Image (cartoon, rainbow, N blue to C red; front, side, top):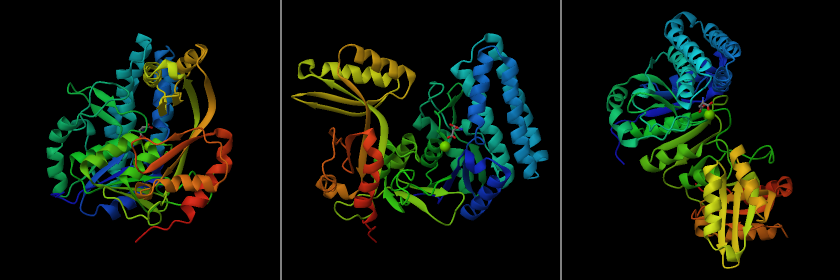
Length: 450
Ligand code: ASP
Ligand code: MG
């Protein structure tokens, strides 16, 4: 794909801008990565989003005093970071109307006795915007409001981007950035066509960065976080897990679908559409380990597995053959609407298995209701996935790895449409033993091809 500029977009998460010290580190990274300008997306300072949500909940419940306690803590925390950078005088002017607005929004919520999703998004925008002004001062760039370009629908709290409108609105940004500007903007926020503020869902600023990368025709988007890129396994179960230097988009998608927390699944779609390089790097060790996610897959040996992922808390529903497909499909739909994640729906002539993770109280309730209707339901399962481009050419390698580990009580194979992952169900109690052994067998011994 031809690109008019070699634009880079950098994104810093809440912990990477959480203190004066962290901001100083981020500034050094910006200087190094963007000597000729570019775009920087920043999250709210760590903990801010939770604070604002708690303040809204308190205000909505009529407790304005406690909402204002949260607001005071927020103001103090931000002032402390700005003071530590010697930038309090610079940011006080842009901050004042934002903090006043948050105060007014909370007062309004307390008067109404309700925090509406739209009001909450307006309040959350304050946290993101405070941080972007501070980062702009610290990185010596110019603040630009992302709501000028990041057009979304009106689903407050989990808005969906409107790609054509975003692309059209981004034209002046493309031009300015190609001319060498260094712009700092907010993550997580968008705006409807009417100009109402929306948010993309928790953890959404990675998605902001990749959506902006797409609209601005960037050649690279860098996500700066507090881990060493994407690891080959969860380090709490596998201490020798290591960063994967290069991986394909397909591998990254499979990993985030099956449990890896480092990348938000929504953030990967723009990479596939636009074909830029996505880099995940550690602010604490900028020169060390990082992962590059490439639109064209790196070479892998046949059968090579790059990582092992897992997700706990899965429940299995077993539908008898006589129930046909309607009943399981209907159950899956209802559970997903309530916020459950579906990990498998396997239909055979002998019956249908639905593997689901009830991630919200509403989903747990819907699951209880199904279980109460005499449907066999078991909790305490986990899904384990082997992920690697090598499985594309030799999918049976995954089964050989499993067989080599002996008689594992496998509850079902989940091979969906992805050709780079093979997943299966195991009782949760086996994870602690199985994951390190699988990692040891399939990942540790495989070497990346040049
Ligand atoms: N500040 C938002 C959150 O905490 C968005 C983000 O950090 O990605 O969810
Ligand atoms: Mg985040």
